Image 1 (cartoon, rainbow, N blue to C red):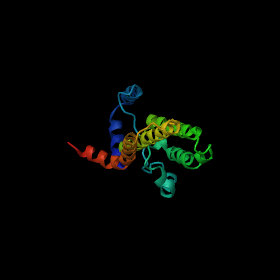
Image 2 (spheres, rainbow, N blue to C red):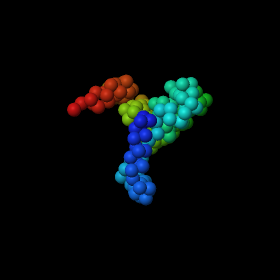
Image 3 (tube, rainbow, N blue to C red):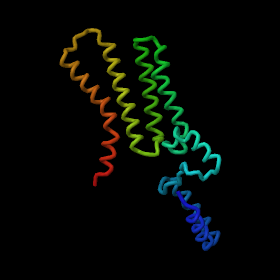
Image 4 (cartoon, rainbow, N blue to C red):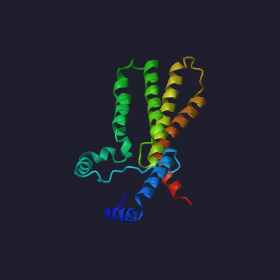
Length: 187
């Protein structure tokens, strides 16, 4: 995020270079950025696009300011996932194998989209989201195992162990953000 004074200073420095050298330098940087050697500039929610962006941020910024600019749509994607998992899934053969499989597909697709885009501004949020989706996927797989386990040969101790693992996975979602912050501060 550059201030106007910094941009003016850069413009003055650019004036000192001849146009041919400046164009050559820009082409070289563009080639290196295309190969991933030099990072490309990133957009951020900073109001540089004028009054319209300021108005949008004031009205609905709380919905998308935690996402990278190019992933402004991710909140809509997340709401669609949550709607599927909490409301739509209720109408898919209640208590059936199909209901569990549809849930697994929704969570897996969400994991793939989140992992491939890493949409959050803060990388810790990306990690927490991926961990939460992985945990939901494991819980649904456990539900699938329980649904298919018709023999009832599972002992009480095995059930207790699996229940403890499920509890730890779901509880870890609450402890992952503070742990991530502490690890970030560690020397």
